[in-house]
Each structure stands twice: as structure tokens, then as C-alpha cells.
Amino acid sequence: MHPVLPPGATVVRCGPGHLQIGTTPPLRVPDLPGTAQVLRHADGATSARSLAEIAERDGAPSGRQLISTLLSRGALVPAAPAESSLPGITVVHEPLTARFAATLETAAASPGDDVTIVASLGEPYRPAIRDLGERGLSHLPVIFIQGYARIGPLTHPGSSPCLDCYDAGRSRTDPAWRAVAVHLGSGRPPGGPPSLALMLSAVGHTLELVRLGRIGRVVTVGPGRETGVTEPVGWDAACPCQLLAA
Ligand SMILES: [Zn+2]
Image (cartoon, rainbow, N blue to C red; front, top):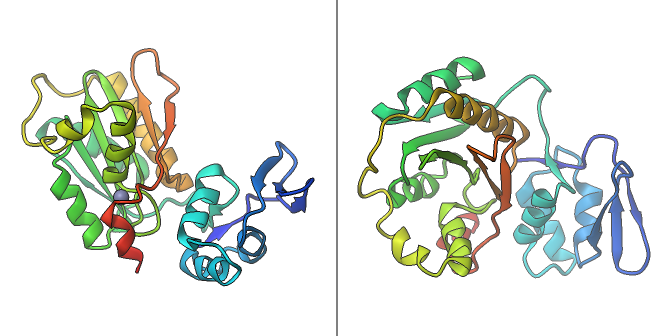
């Protein structure tokens, strides 16, 4: 991935200890070691890994984490080759998510192996998702569960938080989640395929997330959440996915 400033945005210092990116609306980030250097070099041609090295030479304790934070806050965005183009996608599905997969593939019209989308009814089997990361494949879980769809996190292995990071974060607010998570995906929940309305909504949100390269977040859609509710997903310090960048 090659991060770049949002289109048209410039960086200025604003008061002690902060940098401002753009004006409409202005986005302020702390002027931590490495931040100004990263923003200066984020030209869409320099890779995220090179930017992380630049940050660490300038004193950042973890360049990769700094890049991830700037991306998740929107201070940097992935350089897109063209407005209309999507990364090439592969959709892995099961029988009850086949219609979602077919609709998504038709709407995207962009077959390829840039991002593997894993569509499951109920929580996906964690080792299968982990395996994609260990093979260095960018991936995006799309989970239909209890009348809702949860999309994300879009994971570029070693460069953005993974589903295990999501589980760890969720465990902090829902102590039962870690105990539940180890069993996730080992059984199929009761019920039929997702409704047409939910399926189409999930297709739209999935395409948007992939097209814009939105990492570090999950979006939940469904009844009462038609426009999508976004939650941040941060790195879990203990998650082995971070070793993938080494
Ligand atoms: Zn992780």
C-alpha cells in the first residue's frame, strides 16, 4: 500500500504539539516523533513500509503503528489508481452466502487477488482467517449474523489490524467475548440466508470499504443501522499479526 494525503490537503502546524491536515474539515493530529516526516513523504509513491522506516529514523517508537493510526484517522489515505477502479477481488463463500458473493462479484466487476473477501453466515472460523494473513493475503471478513452484517476489518497482513485484533478489542468491553471467540466458526447458526435488503446493503458497504481502502474499522449494517455504524479497530499489542511486518 502507498499512503498519500487526502486529495488537496496540505499540512500546517497549529499551536504547540499539533499538525493540521486540510481545511474542509480540518483534521488535527498530535505532532509525535516521525509524524511530520511521514506526512511530508506520503506522496503515493512511497510504500507504507518505507514511511514506517522514515518515522522510526525520526524517533517514532513504532513506525508501522504510526502509519496505521494516521490511516485510520483519515490523515492519510491509500493512493487509488483511479476513481472508478476497485482492487481485484476474490470472494470466498458458503452456500448460504452464495447470493451475496455473486451479487458482489457482478457489482465489482473486478476479479483478481488483491483482496480476498470471506463471506460467512455466522462468525467465521478464526484459523481460516488467520491462515490468509499468514499467507500474506489481504482479506476482508463479511459476517452475516442475527439479522445484521458486520464488515471488516480490511486486513493488509502486517500493515493493518486483523480480526484477532478486533476480538481482543471487543474482549475489553465484552469480557465473555474472548472465551466465545475461540469457538467462533466451529458451528453454523440456525436460520436461512440473509434477506435481500441486508445482502444488498452489505454489498454496497463492502464495495465502499474496499474501494476506499478503509482499514482499522468494522461497519455494521442492519435494522436501525441502515447507513452503517462504524467502530474503530486498533492493533492489539499481543497479536502475532504484527510480526508479519517484520
Ligand atoms: Zn492482529
